[in-house]
Amino acid sequence: MKEKGRKVIVQNRRARHDYAILDTYEAGVALVGTEVKSLRHGRASMADAFATVDDGEVWLRGLHVPEYTQGSWTNHEPRRTRKLLLHKGEIERLIGKIREGGLTLVPLALYFNDGKVKCEIALARGKKSFDKRHDLAKRDADRDIQRAIGRAAKGRARSMR
Image (cartoon, rainbow, N blue to C red):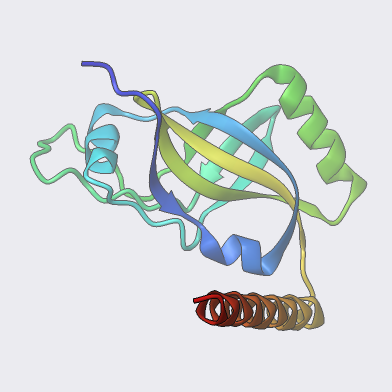
């Protein structure tokens, strides 16, 4: 039976905190069989993962996919470099934007899309520490506003009875 929809394996939450996301791309990932089986168990870590462009190809480095427990001598190396599959035009656009300066490729998520492993990568700019503090303060303020709106709505609901 064919899988349908999107099933997230792992997300890189740190990336959204450390980088300002400018543009996102969905890329296929060239994997070996035991890697896919290990990913189906939901086991992976993007803690140190990053993407690079070398010789016109995009590579995912630092992604940790643990060895498949039932694997034999055919098992994969957990931190091997994996090729990301993108269209040539997308790769050339990424190379151009990265050369402009200050931008990097950051993996955001690894997921199954209709049974195939996909990686969401982002063209991002690093945030300064004051930008991070500003984002945290804005998020706290938004949360307080939503809380106040919720309290007001509940108060009105009680007075109508």
